[in-house]
Image (cartoon, rainbow, N blue to C red; front, side, top):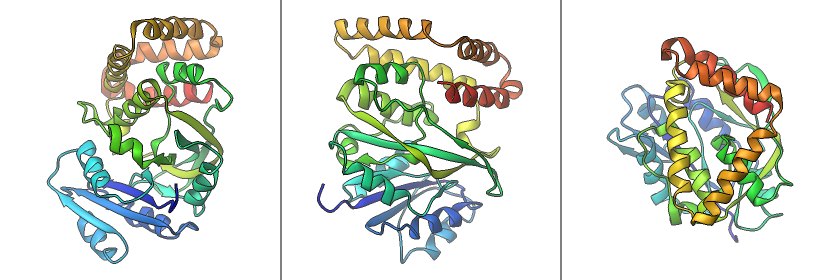
Length: 292
């Protein structure tokens, strides 16, 4: 990487409530070699007006509502950076987010995706807690991939991804849009031998609120993610697919009893009515991730 230009792509759809705070947090980064591309995906609120006020500082592209993957891929097609950073208009970067990611990237090969810990904030910006991702930096590629197959989630808003990855195999349009980041990570790891590295400090304030797409119909999403895993595994050569399936079975046997109990409870909840289970499922998911 020579210029280390970072392309921040923000898919925007009816994001008026938090959009200005998000944009301001990117524009005040200590690392300035960035371009910001906001894709307005047919917003019907004041988001387009807010974006227009920033038109001298960011690139704005508008399209009819076609969904998250379409907005992201449009932004990717227009970006000029060496690095891609997908960022949600609900969330807030710390002032040194991109500088920290770029500095760490210099310590690794080009075949790596960086990610970090993050803070959970509420509607008003109050920090609820710091979320520590499991540190798997010392694991082999195979063992890390087992964790991904088991459902290890990476907060895409914390990541820094070489742009070449997106140019080569991109974002897939899926029936469940909230699964597209997991699909991308799993394909990157299993099909393209991409590695992952955690920065063990919070670099993003991730906002949780009731209107969030990723917190709706969680049980449906979990079932869909299972289908994605099976589909990607089937693309592997049979000996490697057998190795992963066997390794996954063995890994599950080594889990602490507490984690097994949480996962069993989550399976029971996933069969309950959506209106009754989604909030509890979100709690279970966070507890499982925290105990990985």
